[in-house]
Image (cartoon, rainbow, N blue to C red; front, side, top):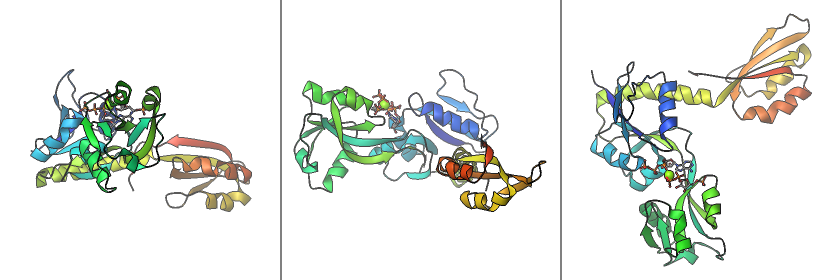
Length: 285
Ligand SMILES: Nc1ncnc2c1ncn2[C@@H]1O[C@H](COP(=O)(O)OP(=O)(O)OP(=O)(O)O)[C@@H](O)[C@H]1O
Ligand SMILES: O=P(O)(O)OC[C@H]1O[C@H](OP(=O)(O)OP(=O)(O)O)[C@H](O)[C@@H]1O
Ligand SMILES: [Mg+2]
């Protein structure tokens, strides 16, 4: 029987969340320490631990069928590779930054300026639309140091909290793209492995929906039940059960994770008490 080959980052920012996602999908991976390859014991899947930056080439060559990879790397090196699913972790942006003291008015200011980056194709593509030509200097790490040592006038790199820029006395001036971890698919995947991918994707979607949702329960006086239901943006219709105490009901529903905070005050104003917000493990719609 065929096994689908998935590339996961060997070490770094994507590794842990990628393995956790597979685990949450009920897939057990027999991980020997420092192994570069491992098999799942309960799903037709093999994991190859690779460098994030090498994964686009392996996908293109069909060495792996699918991968969990930073979208920014796919944009830089991906070409014809398809994104099957956005995974919601490792969120960051790829931005242009200049020294804090620079008076920056717009992208034209960077014409013929030296830009240090690990993302030359992304920079080139971005500047093309403005008819501005930067002088790109390819650097593979610690890009933020470049302006301070006189190597560049600006940089293009990943920004998340902004603390690396801050520490290096730089300011973000343009967000070129936003990125997160994605499930990418090789253009050479076989039909047999495509069928396995569909099964995996179904599990991933159930896990992601659950991560994004909460189960909430509350007690409400009967004369407020209709008003409270109107406030709850649920899956279908909330469950309403009578409490042992006369005149009260318990309302249960599933809501989007963050929307809870938007309605909490109104729920309380309508007499809701004893609110419980509970995580959901899997969600199949
Ligand atoms: N500070 C950050 N916050 C959130 N996500 C980030 C951050 N830095 C990087 N990422 C995302 O995680 C991915 C992996 O980053 P990481 O620094 O672990 O690896 P790398 O050095 O780019 O790659 P390689 O595995 O090839 O050595 C990046 O491509 C990006 O999508
Ligand atoms: O905005 P921040 O939250 O500071 O994050 C941005 C930094 O994070 C990444 O580096 P990382 O820590 O992954 O180190 P690396 O350069 O060794 O990959 C990225 O290359 C930036 O330098
Ligand atoms: Mg990094």
